[in-house]
Amino acid sequence: MNKVIIFSAPSGSGKTTLVKHCLETFPELAFSISCTTRNARGTEINGIDYHFVSPDDFRKKITEDAFVEFEEVYADKYYGTLKSEVDRIWKDGKVVIFDVDVKGGISLKKYFGEQALSVFIMPPSVAELELRLIARGTDDSDTIKTRVQKAADEMTFKTEFDEIVVNNNLDTAKTDIENIIQEFLAL
Image (cartoon, rainbow, N blue to C red; front, side, top):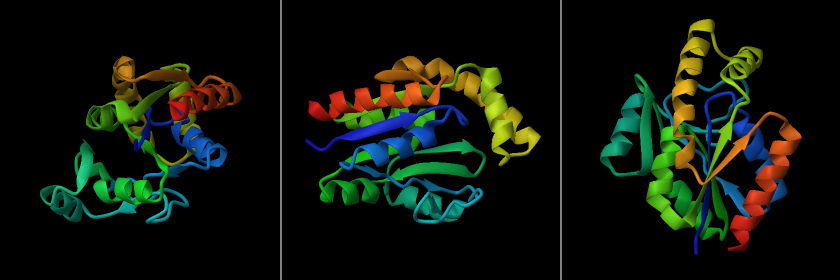
């Protein structure tokens, strides 16, 4: 059976760090590169970190039914999972790992059902999350304020995921994730 692992979390929870750890730890996993209309941040590279496209190109892909799921997270800021990405990974005999927003994670779990393990990465608190976003240095204060408000809302959806991991201590969170994935892959 083809499998997928879905990681979702509010922005700044450490989700991407944990996904990278999983990719280094489990050679049978392969990263699904999401499609987005947002601009690249820092050292992000098109086709490696995301498929960066214009809002018009994204909307065209929607009409072509090219997505497993997609979401307009903010006005004209779309994120989505391309069917072609999932097919590419499965053809290589690998397990797909997703790094997606909370609504995307819920949609992916509904789409893939028993083929999917969904993991919600919880920040220790909203206040800690805000500090992490500030320390990241990639967003202005208005964007951080919006992300923190959104995070508080997103945390109310945690029970819709198969597993919840609190990222209070990164090493502990890594160990918890490793155990959860090992169990899922053994099924």
